[in-house]
Length: 105
Image (cartoon, rainbow, N blue to C red; front, side):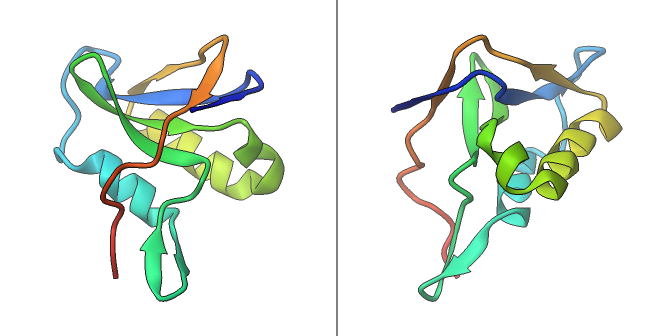
């Protein structure tokens, strides 16, 4: 794990009214929508990763994304706001390890 400066956020797959967000693979879809093709395969952004938080699916967004690609940062934040999803702003950011099986082309 890599510890990052504060400013990251976690989008939780639950609405502010407490309902589970659908579709059930929303986290993977969001991460794939901001992924890149490198060396002939699709790879997640190093700053946007699917995670599990307690029993909920979520997406971790590193603060560095805001510096490197402000439009992409706005896209993921607005996705959460538009869908009324819970957003957490951790005091300490620990970038999770990449998933064992990333999407392949």
